[in-house]
Structure formats: C-alpha cells, structure tokens
Length: 443
Image (cartoon, rainbow, N blue to C red; front, side):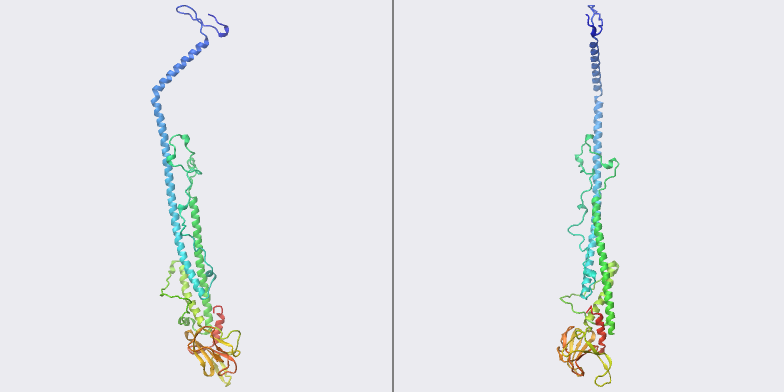
C-alpha cells in the first residue's frame, strides 16, 4: 500500500502470518499513545482517591470544626464585651443617680434656706428696712424638677461595637463561611476601643451646671444675709445715735416697751428658733443676724412710741426754749419746763406719739391742757389751747388732733406750750425733736 508524500513517510509493517506489509500514519500513533497515557492517569487517580478518601474527609471535618470553634469564641468575646459595657453602664448610672440624689438634697436645703431668707426679708420690710437683696427673689428656686429626675437610664444606649451599625445579636452570627464575616471591629485592628461615655458625659455636664447654679444661689443667699446684716447695723447705729440726743437709755427703755401690735391675726406658743452656727457660713451669718434683728426691732418699736414728731404741721417758730428764762409776767428768773410754738388761734394741735389721754381739762397756769401718757413712762403735755377735742381715757395715735391753739392760762398771746416728761420729770422736748429729724425716714 502506498500513500502520498503529503501524508508523511510510511512505516513498513511486516505481518507474522500473511507476511504482508502495513503502513500506520504518525498522527494515529500519537493519538493512541495520548489515549493510553490518559487512561493510565485516570486509573492512577482513581486508585489514589480510593486509597486516601478517608484522610481527606477527616481533614475537611477538622477544618470546619476549627472554623466553628473560632466563631463560637468570637461569640463569647462579643458577649463578654456586652457584659462589660452593661456593667460599665450600671456603674455610670449608679454614679449619676448618686450625684442627682446629692443635688436634690442640696436643693432641698437651699429651698429651706430660701424660706429663712424670705422670712428675714419680710421682717426687715415690716420694720421699714428693705435691702435690695431682700427685694429681688433669688434665682434657683427650682433647679431640678422632682417629676423629671435626671437618671443615667434616660441616656441613649452606649455606642455599638461597630461604629455606625447596630451590633448583631450573637444568635444571628453565622458559624460557617469566613467570607460572610463583617469587617473587624476597629479595636481588633489596633485602633482605640470606643468609649461609650459621650451620653454620660453630657449628663455629667448638665449636673455640673446644676451644681454651679446651686452654688451661685447659695452664695447669693449668703450675700443677701450679709447685706441685711449691714442694713441692720446701719439702722441700729442711726437709731442709737438719734436716741442719744434725748439723753435716755434707749436699750433699757426699749426693753420695757411692749412691741407694737401686729396687723392681722397671729399667735401661737413661743418656741425659740435654734440655729447651729457651726453648720456652715449661712447658719453662722443667720445666727449672728438674730440678736441684731431683735435689737433693731425693739428700737424701731421704741421710736414708733416716743414723741419724736412735732405737735403742729408745717414750719412753726419756737418762741421760747426749755430751761432758764425770765418769766414774762414777774420778770424774774424762772424755769421753763417746755417749749413754746407761735401759731394762729384755732390751729390744730396733734399728738406726737400714740398713747392714752390722762388729763383733758383746764389746769391752772396751763389753761386748757391735755396730757398724754406714752410707753415707757414718757408723757407729753399740750397747754394754753382754746379748745380740747379729746377726753380722759381716750386712746390716741400719732397725729390725732387733741385741741386747738389758744391763749388760756398764763399766756401773753396765742401759742402752744409743749412739754415732754419721763416719770413726771420734765426733759427738753427739742432733744426728741432733733432725734425725730434724724429718724425722719423711719417714722
């Protein structure tokens, strides 16, 4: 058999039986050789698989088990993180609530002190002393509303583990498939662990502001007490200095004079108000303020009942002083026990202090005379009047018209003879009038 040159040279094959020669193309030979090689490889792989399939399955199971354990460890770590954050939240909440309780207690004390400051201010206003701090209400009367307490539980939840995304529940985490894991948490890659303190910090800042507000209010209360004390000291000094003009023992006389009646119905058993001066500066200031208040109240009550005003309204001329003078009738030295005011006949004569009329009649050289008994043994006399307008036993107040100017008794012309006495001993009325001039703003 022959073939063309394009198909390559033929290989002679000698038959064993027929002794005929066969020719095999080269492509056919290579194809058979490749088939034989592939069959041999498949047979070898099949044999290897059959011999090693148990070890391969074991390794696959071990790898999957290790992966499952890794995810379970991750779940445990996340649960530990949750517990740690929850514990920290509880600790922070307890701290915030303890701070709130402290502020509420301080606020309660502040309100009690505010009531005392207001009471002292009202007392001073009732006696005519009203310092600026007592007029204006102090700030901070209500700093924390009891129905809206500040609590750590009112703060939003702490920052999640993965910033910007909610932390999944452990049960929802996949146990298999590493490709399904989310990105690692920032602190797992070396970054700082997130601090879930921002909400608590905001609460702490709010409580700090409340704390500072309470402190400012407490300082304002203390300043108000000190201002009241200064006002009382000034009033006490002014009253004592003015009453020194009269020549009387003001404190002794004040102790013997009953306090003026209070308007409206008040009363109850006397229970002394006790203050622990060692408790703090507020208590110390209030304790020091009490005796000064008592002294000023007594002195104010005294000046309200002393004859410190003029017996006639408007500007009047004094025609004769108290003391030594030449008697207008005998022209010999004499003691003048009062002072004389020039006035027109019929001009009203007024009581210079509250009291009770003890005499209202014609009395010798006094002519028509009214005598009024005041507190502390002090009395005043109004003489030479043309008319008497009160009667014995009648209670009169400051400014009550008791008669009219005249010239009855030993008198050379229309005028008012005015006397001031203590325990029936005459004193110079001008001393009381000068004291009244210095205390004009308090009368």
